[in-house]
Amino acid sequence: MITLGPTGISSHDDHIAVHRATVEAFNRYRLTAAQEPLLYFVAITDEVAKMLESEGFEFEIHESERMPTVVIDIRAQIPEDPSAQDAADMFEVGPFDDEAFHRAYPAAPPGGVAVGSWE
Image 1 (cartoon, rainbow, N blue to C red):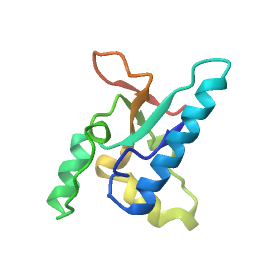
Image 2 (image 1 turned 60 degrees about the vertical axis):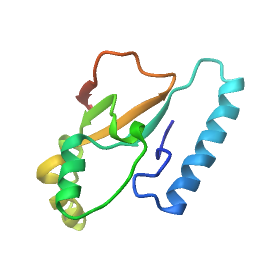
Image 3 (image 1 turned 180 degrees about the vertical axis):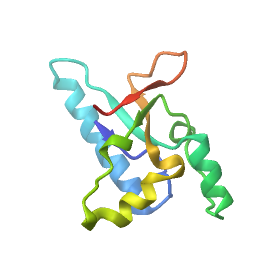
């Protein structure tokens, strides 16, 4: 399951509420699941954090949201549909070539970040 982390990256009340509700639902599901489920929080890489800070975006996030344990290259998944061109333009350059996540449960094994593509 993937959800926002404790601060929702932006500290927006709705994002924090989504986090809390999802974690509560995950914990209920975990008690009855046939196999141990995984819980991931959306995270940002240092590169993205630095870019946002340089643009004047101020944020205080939970350490898990700035500590990715999985980074996925999404360049091949960026839509080429002209109706999605504005969004695609944003993702074609800079630090938005990847999606980053922090494995919250069970805790990721120590030793680095898993990196791969979405395929």
